[in-house]
Image 1 (spheres, helix red, strand yellow):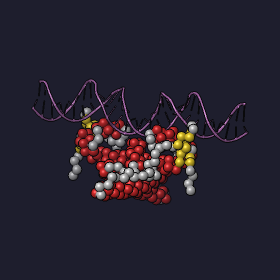
Image 2 (tube, each protein chain N blue to C red):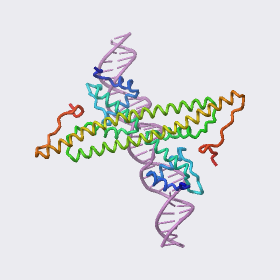
Image 3 (cartoon, chains in turn red, brown, purple, cyan):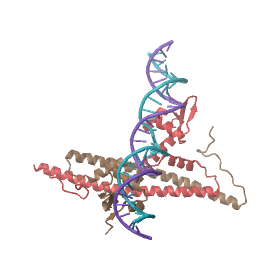
Image 4 (cartoon, helix red, strand yellow):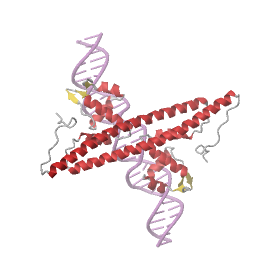
Amino acid sequence: MTKKTYSISELSHEFELTTRSIRFYEDQGLLRPEHRGTTRIYGNQDRVRLKLILRGKRLGLSLAEIRELFALWDQTPSGSEKQLLLMLATIASRRAHLEQQIKDIAMVQQELDIAEQRCTEALAKLRQEMSEGRVPTPAKGSATNRKVS
Amino acid sequence: MTKKTYSISELSHEFELTTRSIRFYEDQGLLRPEHRGTTRIYGNQDRVRLKLILRGKRLGLSLAEIRELFALWDQTPSGSEKQLLLMLATIASRRAHLEQQIKDIAMVQQELDIAEQRCTEALAKLRQEMSEGRVPTPAKGSATNRKVS
DNA sequence: AATAAACTTTACGTTTACGTAAGAATTAAA
DNA sequence: TTTAATTCTTACGTAAACGTAAAGTTTATT
């Protein structure tokens, strides 16, 4: 069984963010810890939420967008037909967004591949020249490295 | 052959952002259009850059981070061995970041799957009840939909 | 009992990424 | 040539997401 409750500093250490941020998320309606007396007590529910918040942020979502996702998630599907259809549309839209991100990532990865290759080759060349006792030759004008007229 | 030059408004229409943003990116050193007389002239190079900027933003990168990626990309690998190794490390780090994002996306997609399923089921149930002339039953307390004490 | 450690609220400050005029200059059209 | 459209610079404004004190409680420790 996982731990039942957490203090704010425990969470801040575990997830490496400030207590300020955690309280701010509560301000924004993303967390609802129990307020026992003067201090906050976070349950597993809250911990999971926090994890989801951070995941959302890594994907570039704003806190407002994350809040919407939570609302989406929280709604036990008990609404009207119109509500449910709207929700399905929202989900589809989110999905499209994620798919765009996947494409973007793939492209950036390609670029990194190329950059890494160029870099590795240059390194190899450099080392070979060194071993031959030559003076390293500066590479000449690549397409993106021209003098700014 | 693609068009050779673009005005700022052409680009702003094509990519659906304001001219303000485009000039701002220049301010931040992300674009370097030609300044002919009083107006800016953007080449294909600039267009590609702009596309990369937007891709980076979709992945949640800040303009500063995008600028670093450009610097990374622009450096013809002609540096010292130390420089090159540092660059490879940076590339590796970027790669790790992207892989984390892929994982994040996969998890969110799973959640969307579940949400969509719940939603679709609820919709089906609703319609069946309607066809039977019954009054729709409100769903009872899910784990995330409890009354806030 | 006094001090430290962790927690609280309140509130002003800061960075990023633009928005939004305002006013001047240039170019195109009527 | 007057008008209209596009572009420019300058500059103040703003929303988001916290940072950073300040000053006061509560709990734990010596």
